[in-house]
Image 1 (cartoon, rainbow, N blue to C red):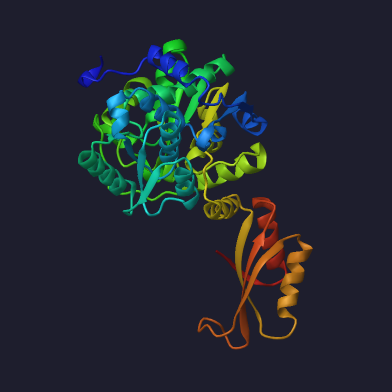
Image 2 (cartoon, rainbow, N blue to C red; image 1 turned 180 degrees about the vertical axis):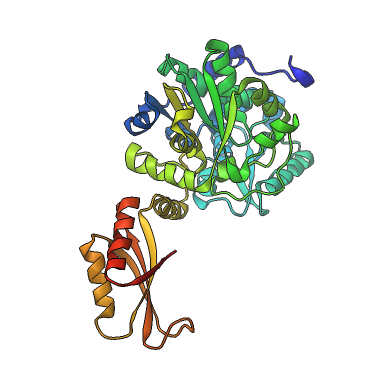
Length: 407
């Protein structure tokens, strides 16, 4: 027992969950990242839960929870609320175990996640603007119908199931010194910390939250779960307004540190995984990688970063890649004032071609009141090779006599 009489999940609980999950979940690969290792100064490995069944680690906890329901509870069916990954985990677990499942999802849930949830046989109901509203609808459904509510993170069976990721990490990388974990409500980091502490108490466990949806830092400072007033992040999978009582206790007692990463960190890390690791990852699933990229010296190697999910909407993927390229200095937006005469635009494009910039968009503006008589404003979006090349482009245009503003 710990403070507040909360009983923590232990190593034996995680080992029991691993036995239950044998043959159900994949032992996902551990991939070495040379690019990250060069930054950290020692081995860095990616634990690829984006390659897990349903595209995330969530099937581990969901199946563990559902498999331990009594026959009477199974007959009543289960209900859950999720923006996507927990929904798919519950849906597949219910299908495998022959249990009826209903999942409430916010209206903003990515369409591929909704389709996948239904594809696994669950009834997906869309409603409400946020996960909070979906959770309320699921709780009401459970009270009205008697269905068993399957919490996405705050239950011992769920934590134990998620902790099996940690056991695999210890088996695959016996000399690991730091495990970095994407963190929302805290189920995954709680389970991994429980598993790691039972076998290797010297290993450092670090949780990573999106800065715009980081409930743990304030909660840990207050000594109790504290709800955020609001959240705005692309990482919908870890956008959780408050820790649970159980996950809070685990993080407080077993996790060494909780760090935060910004939206640009997330987008750059997602782009890094696509380009350097050849992995399709969702923004929530890349938070651990983002933390290592943002501050490599903070993580003693060997490091294992958990890549927790890969269920990304293609539309969002396009936006995030563009954002990541802009944050990395590889997209450049420029405004130039040029004389309003034939050949002016061609001259600008000729300068850009000479310096090797790839023009993606061009717009002309003649009628703005800020322009002088006989002036035209040209807006161009360029693809560059990085920050140094972007500076070279600006220098070239300035030398050619153009007045240039960025953004």
